[in-house]
Length: 233
Image (cartoon, rainbow, N blue to C red; front, side, top):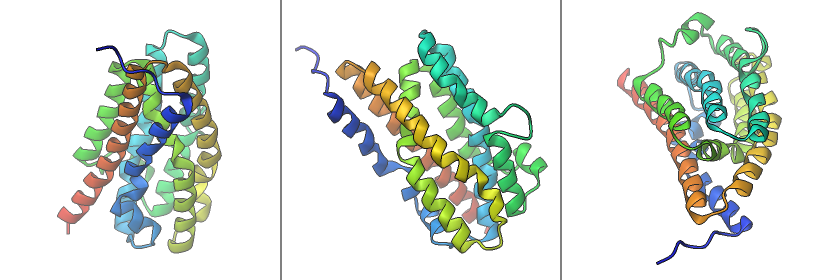
């Protein structure tokens, strides 16, 4: 029995986009955030724990670059590392996330030293970085395609934070304001790479599994945060 034929580009993209059903904006914790139902303790827990994910993204992207033998792909992927790390400690995506930490009442020290990161979040994020280090580069890029769903979710989240959490300094939401457009640009690039280079059904199936793995990582993070908050009350 021979290999199954590759999907055409449109059908392959449809399969990738179908992974949105498991994206973390559908998690009950996230939906409570958008409805304005989180108290300050819960919002701080989310910010402090997501920091671990944010600061790990450049390591994930560096692993993809290290695994990729194609210079043209490495050149396209390298700006992601610079975006998050910035050119100095006071700029870049990670620095903007620490501004959000200030706004919710956390000190930068307690966020950066990760004292609030719960084991389940650490495990989920570490598994994502390990995936990028140990799987083929194309699967690493496919796992990043949660960016397909991110811009709309971030726009809704930012609007909800401004509407419902009036005690926040809204200027500190700059991470999301800047990230929405950036994510739109990055998802176009990543999708083009995956659609162009996954030319067999085997590689297409692997890309879909990689993306589903990433949605599981994000969902597991919120599970762990919510479980920890319930245990503390």
